[in-house]
Image (spheres, rainbow, N blue to C red):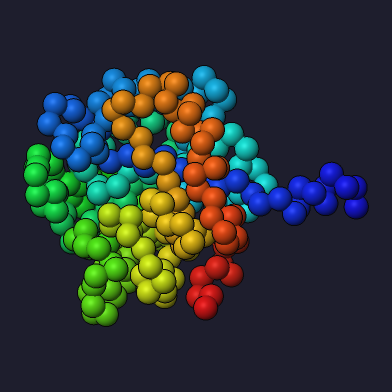
Length: 261
């Protein structure tokens, strides 16, 4: 084996670059910094395209990584299942030929983001909207039932937030639901075990540290202030900020990952 090849195998793989969005609409009232204006979002998508990068769902990104063809792919995720995705984000994604993963809340269909106590109130996707997004080629994932932190849930609530939310979404869309996203990004070993037991093939967090892996993928928050130079800085710094003492690369993605201890 050539020395260079051996060295590459010994070096830790850089973490996947997965962008985390929430709401795409007017940013006038945004105390939690979860909103990106459609104009800024369009510029951010252009930034990706201009650099030869293509936005894809996390499911597609992980499958491509397992097959060694992920170069130039960036994961795009949208948390909370805001209804504005349909009119503001979806047309722009389709214009660029991008896909994305939308993590929704089947226990709050057509409701509002009541967990954001300081507001503003934003409408969430209903069943019809979720089906439209799936039919448009986007991946639908679960964000739990009602956006509760899994690290504080009892056993019954934990099962409902993971297993039952998946069952509802699969019945709703008629498609397998492979991805989960931890509300608030909070994750611990107990929550990871529940997600795996529920049959998901991967899960997204925010900055999971020592828990990083296929069931706790780190992501990069993208906001209204992320201009091209900030995006460039975030992409460069991501591999450095997401390193931790354990295994730095995600575990294998595929059927063997499901049900593992």
